[in-house]
Image 1 (cartoon, helix red, strand yellow):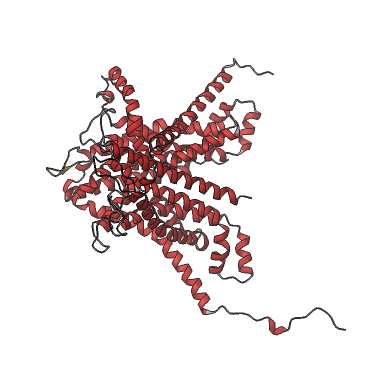
Image 2 (cartoon, rainbow over the protein chains, first blue to last red):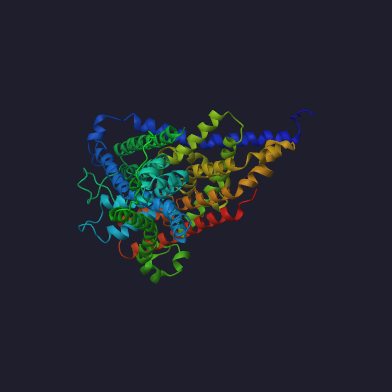
Length: 285
Length: 320
């Protein structure tokens, strides 16, 4: 009994391992290349005026992306304020009140379907429901419409992570709380939710980070604006739409701003992802 | 005899009735969470109804010819989505063809103990972070870095294989081929993550049994481990297919948004999602309706694929 590397099965083994290694290298390559270019093309242009100035008119030099940074924060905040309460509430119902009823199954199925709806469809939906009908003070494109479109995309993630996070809470905690006479409401809000804080917070941070980078639902809901935000019922600039608009412009100043906005956006999103990982890690015993 | 232990008086135990306010809060909270859960279904229904309502005019005008004709002519008001539907299917299927071996191979590489754990975790982390990069940033990278870099290779393909319809035009910039490659980058993390979870869930006893009877690592993988994980991996691939069909920004920026049909992979093409992203803002009249019709088709496609994915996971799962 000895190992003979020239056996065909050992050769095939070696070949397959090499191929898998090459595949893994190829899979990692895009991230490294994209990060490299974003850091190089965007990072070297970072300056203070970038955060305080408006984008230049086509053909002009200089300027910043202050309005787009602010706009991304506003639109993402609107989406979070809608999707987080709705998602956590819905998740609570699924996990605490109706684990396996037909209604819960139907909601879970709808949630999975909603999670698979392409992001552009969410934009089309909000356009048809809110922008074209001008329901908000007769305004068509608005930050509010963009926020709602993003909320539609965030909702399935938040519900799913809440549902699964609450299911992980040991049954003994619920029995204990009921045993000392707590009502259902108190049990859920004071005992179960804090116990499931980590998975819910992780999911929420990831959903917010994802929403901040979404472009497709915003192109024809929040639109774009070359000015500072004028309230949430007017069109608003966001970094993602700025990147899209400026990338296809034939001006170098605009292209450079697109790279810079990418840099700011990627740094924000990767930071949020690492934060989510840190939350998940910190809670582990 | 006296005792130090204070015996509570009998009337200290009372049955405390819940105050009405507390019960109201309980019921109210239950109803609130119920309605929030129901909102998911309402939103989904509202999406379908809104898109369907918007598409009615175009459905009445063009009927099913919409699916098979490729003239998209806002001037004359005739619309057919064949180019976009073809582009959606071809781009997503081709990207999967490349991404599935890469993704599953990577997943195997980082679940089986081929390399040190630190390295495996690092690769896993990087693939997950790749999924976090916004699609519009990948599009920007594709326009300015990937496509110019690839163009000589694509043109070489055209020179050598130009007689073949798929490579019959020179690569002049945006087109189907770069779009497929950027889609590979976008679906790779999904396939890798799901395959990795699936492989991790295969019980260790199966591996040990396989190695115990003297098979090689890849013998065990091909005949024991991969078959045990095949249902989840297939489900993940279907989910990735759904994602690829609906992917918008990166594809829009690099596919060229051609309105004319071409077989060539090197020529500009179009997908339903990129057509929506490009035209929806400026469209009016019947064009909006035609775009809604296309959106409805895209929804049907992704819905079918996603439901099939769930069915596959349930149906194919092996009992071990």
